[in-house]
Image 1 (cartoon, rainbow, N blue to C red):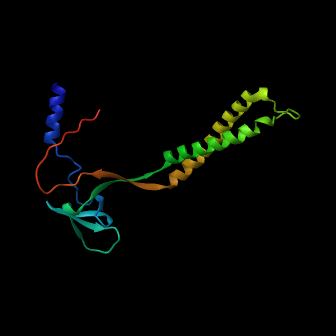
Image 2 (cartoon, rainbow, N blue to C red):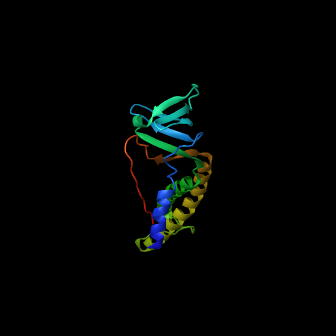
Image 3 (spheres, rainbow, N blue to C red):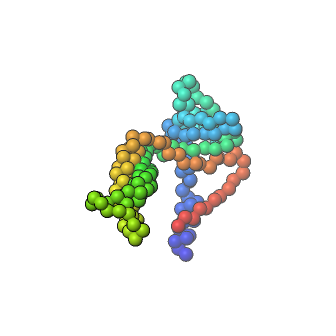
Length: 171
Protein backbone atom coordinates (compact mmCIF):
# COMPACT_ATOMS: atom_id res chain seq x y z
CA UNK A 1 0.00 0.00 0.00
CA UNK A 2 2.84 2.34 0.86
CA UNK A 3 4.40 1.65 -2.56
CA UNK A 4 1.20 2.61 -4.41
CA UNK A 5 0.82 5.82 -2.39
CA UNK A 6 4.39 6.84 -3.20
CA UNK A 7 3.79 6.18 -6.91
CA UNK A 8 0.69 8.38 -6.86
CA UNK A 9 2.61 11.18 -5.14
CA UNK A 10 5.45 10.86 -7.70
CA UNK A 11 2.96 11.06 -10.57
CA UNK A 12 1.41 14.21 -9.13
CA UNK A 13 4.67 15.96 -8.18
CA UNK A 14 6.81 15.34 -11.25
CA UNK A 15 5.54 16.89 -14.47
CA UNK A 16 5.26 14.61 -17.46
CA UNK A 17 8.40 15.18 -19.56
CA UNK A 18 6.48 14.43 -22.74
CA UNK A 19 4.17 17.42 -22.38
CA UNK A 20 6.87 20.08 -22.44
CA UNK A 21 9.11 20.35 -25.47
CA UNK A 22 12.53 21.81 -24.76
CA UNK A 23 14.04 24.54 -26.87
CA UNK A 24 16.27 22.86 -29.45
CA UNK A 25 14.43 19.52 -29.33
CA UNK A 26 13.77 17.89 -32.70
CA UNK A 27 10.05 17.31 -33.27
CA UNK A 28 7.77 16.15 -36.06
CA UNK A 29 4.31 17.73 -36.19
CA UNK A 30 1.36 16.62 -38.27
CA UNK A 31 -1.17 19.19 -39.39
CA UNK A 32 -4.40 18.34 -41.23
CA UNK A 33 -2.73 18.91 -44.61
CA UNK A 34 1.04 18.39 -44.06
CA UNK A 35 3.79 16.92 -41.91
CA UNK A 36 6.68 19.14 -40.75
CA UNK A 37 9.98 18.35 -39.03
CA UNK A 38 12.17 20.86 -37.25
CA UNK A 39 13.69 22.15 -34.04
CA UNK A 40 11.67 23.85 -31.31
CA UNK A 41 12.75 27.50 -31.33
CA UNK A 42 9.97 28.98 -29.18
CA UNK A 43 7.36 27.63 -26.83
CA UNK A 44 4.24 29.25 -25.41
CA UNK A 45 0.94 28.30 -23.82
CA UNK A 46 -0.82 28.28 -27.19
CA UNK A 47 1.75 26.65 -29.45
CA UNK A 48 5.26 26.04 -30.71
CA UNK A 49 7.68 27.96 -32.88
CA UNK A 50 9.63 25.65 -35.20
CA UNK A 51 12.75 26.19 -37.25
CA UNK A 52 12.02 23.84 -40.14
CA UNK A 53 14.52 21.38 -41.63
CA UNK A 54 13.98 22.66 -45.18
CA UNK A 55 16.29 25.65 -44.46
CA UNK A 56 13.76 28.30 -45.55
CA UNK A 57 14.75 30.38 -42.56
CA UNK A 58 12.54 32.00 -39.99
CA UNK A 59 10.30 30.46 -37.38
CA UNK A 60 6.96 28.86 -38.18
CA UNK A 61 4.39 29.28 -35.39
CA UNK A 62 1.98 26.38 -34.91
CA UNK A 63 -0.93 26.35 -32.46
CA UNK A 64 -1.54 23.24 -30.39
CA UNK A 65 -5.15 23.28 -31.56
CA UNK A 66 -3.99 22.91 -35.19
CA UNK A 67 -1.93 19.77 -34.47
CA UNK A 68 -3.24 16.32 -35.23
CA UNK A 69 -0.09 14.47 -34.11
CA UNK A 70 3.13 15.42 -32.29
CA UNK A 71 6.32 13.33 -32.04
CA UNK A 72 9.79 13.89 -30.58
CA UNK A 73 12.98 12.42 -31.96
CA UNK A 74 14.78 9.73 -29.99
CA UNK A 75 17.79 10.02 -32.29
CA UNK A 76 19.09 7.96 -35.18
CA UNK A 77 19.84 4.29 -34.68
CA UNK A 78 21.57 1.73 -36.83
CA UNK A 79 19.54 -1.27 -37.95
CA UNK A 80 22.05 -4.07 -37.19
CA UNK A 81 19.65 -6.36 -35.33
CA UNK A 82 16.87 -5.96 -37.88
CA UNK A 83 19.32 -6.68 -40.72
CA UNK A 84 20.69 -9.78 -38.97
CA UNK A 85 17.22 -11.18 -38.26
CA UNK A 86 16.01 -10.50 -41.80
CA UNK A 87 19.18 -12.01 -43.26
CA UNK A 88 18.90 -15.12 -41.10
CA UNK A 89 15.26 -15.71 -42.04
CA UNK A 90 15.90 -15.31 -45.76
CA UNK A 91 19.09 -17.39 -45.63
CA UNK A 92 17.50 -20.14 -43.56
CA UNK A 93 14.57 -20.42 -45.95
CA UNK A 94 16.76 -20.54 -49.04
CA UNK A 95 19.36 -22.82 -47.43
CA UNK A 96 16.73 -25.21 -46.13
CA UNK A 97 15.05 -25.49 -49.52
CA UNK A 98 18.33 -25.84 -51.41
CA UNK A 99 19.81 -28.41 -49.05
CA UNK A 100 16.55 -30.39 -48.89
CA UNK A 101 16.61 -30.61 -52.68
CA UNK A 102 20.27 -31.55 -52.62
CA UNK A 103 19.63 -34.19 -49.93
CA UNK A 104 19.46 -36.89 -52.58
CA UNK A 105 22.93 -36.07 -53.74
CA UNK A 106 25.38 -37.74 -51.44
CA UNK A 107 29.04 -36.85 -51.10
CA UNK A 108 29.78 -40.45 -51.92
CA UNK A 109 29.57 -41.28 -55.60
CA UNK A 110 26.90 -43.68 -56.71
CA UNK A 111 24.49 -43.19 -53.79
CA UNK A 112 20.85 -42.83 -54.73
CA UNK A 113 17.90 -41.21 -53.01
CA UNK A 114 15.43 -43.72 -51.64
CA UNK A 115 12.29 -42.97 -49.57
CA UNK A 116 13.76 -44.57 -46.45
CA UNK A 117 16.37 -41.81 -46.32
CA UNK A 118 13.79 -39.04 -45.72
CA UNK A 119 15.13 -38.38 -42.22
CA UNK A 120 18.55 -37.75 -43.68
CA UNK A 121 17.08 -35.22 -46.12
CA UNK A 122 15.38 -33.34 -43.27
CA UNK A 123 18.60 -33.30 -41.28
CA UNK A 124 20.49 -32.11 -44.35
CA UNK A 125 17.89 -29.35 -44.83
CA UNK A 126 18.19 -28.29 -41.16
CA UNK A 127 21.97 -28.12 -41.50
CA UNK A 128 21.62 -26.05 -44.69
CA UNK A 129 19.12 -23.70 -43.05
CA UNK A 130 21.44 -23.10 -40.08
CA UNK A 131 24.61 -22.73 -42.16
CA UNK A 132 23.24 -20.51 -44.92
CA UNK A 133 21.03 -18.60 -42.46
CA UNK A 134 24.03 -17.76 -40.25
CA UNK A 135 26.11 -16.65 -43.21
CA UNK A 136 23.37 -14.42 -44.64
CA UNK A 137 22.67 -13.05 -41.13
CA UNK A 138 26.23 -11.70 -41.05
CA UNK A 139 25.70 -10.04 -44.42
CA UNK A 140 22.36 -8.62 -43.22
CA UNK A 141 23.97 -7.26 -40.05
CA UNK A 142 26.62 -5.54 -42.15
CA UNK A 143 24.02 -3.97 -44.38
CA UNK A 144 21.93 -2.97 -41.36
CA UNK A 145 24.97 -1.26 -39.82
CA UNK A 146 25.07 1.04 -42.83
CA UNK A 147 21.39 2.04 -42.49
CA UNK A 148 20.46 4.75 -39.98
CA UNK A 149 16.82 5.41 -39.23
CA UNK A 150 15.44 8.11 -36.98
CA UNK A 151 13.26 6.83 -34.14
CA UNK A 152 10.20 8.84 -33.03
CA UNK A 153 8.07 8.80 -29.89
CA UNK A 154 4.49 9.97 -30.02
CA UNK A 155 3.58 12.75 -27.57
CA UNK A 156 0.23 13.85 -26.20
CA UNK A 157 -0.92 17.16 -27.60
CA UNK A 158 -1.29 19.91 -25.03
CA UNK A 159 -4.92 20.95 -24.70
CA UNK A 160 -5.84 24.63 -24.41
CA UNK A 161 -9.03 24.20 -22.39
CA UNK A 162 -9.76 22.29 -19.21
CA UNK A 163 -7.55 20.50 -16.78
CA UNK A 164 -7.01 16.82 -16.30
CA UNK A 165 -4.99 14.25 -14.49
CA UNK A 166 -3.90 10.91 -15.81
CA UNK A 167 -2.08 8.10 -14.13
CA UNK A 168 -0.46 5.24 -16.00
CA UNK A 169 0.67 2.11 -14.20
CA UNK A 170 3.09 -0.13 -16.07
CA UNK A 171 4.27 -3.48 -14.88
